[in-house]
Image (cartoon, rainbow, N blue to C red):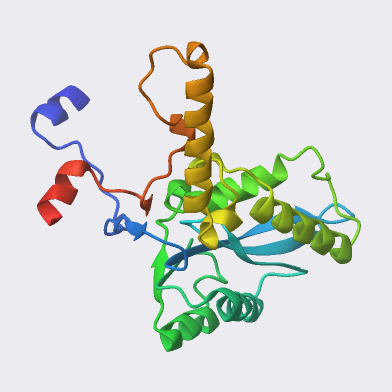
Length: 244
């Protein structure tokens, strides 16, 4: 019967199903610090089962510098607004703030704040973690640390841990995505001078011991290179050429 119905093109969905228009892929570019911030909230397990604290963290996608971070006992748009105002007051107001579609991110409080400041609010597509890669990667780095506890004994303990992590990440963590610089070096403009010192030291080592480097013409290891721009969902090269 189904074979006959298929031949007559009568096998189809007969229920009335909701259809959703395709979501636009967010395409963001940052060519320097202070242009695009990404933020998200992650859960930290509390002292007993079922108790969680919320860590609000905002990162500059170009420098990977954490510009704002705080832990609260709940998730709320007003608390997110406070974190943003503190971050903007210290590091400047960005052009774009990117986030997922969580309740605090889409709250009227946050939307009004960004609109009043003239900041473009960018959103990830539903259930697409790759649309917010820098915040997701940051949380994974934090939670995969050997010292990350299974549970935090109190809100104060969680805040102390996050504060220590932010300082270490910003000022001591050598990030592979920014040429093995610390986020602070890139954020505050010290990376170019450090690159020149690295190149000079590498060239001196090549002249002193050429046998150690073989015939490779590469002046600098690829790991130490930095991209001039940072993207969220970089479009294909052919589309970028057409746009240009």
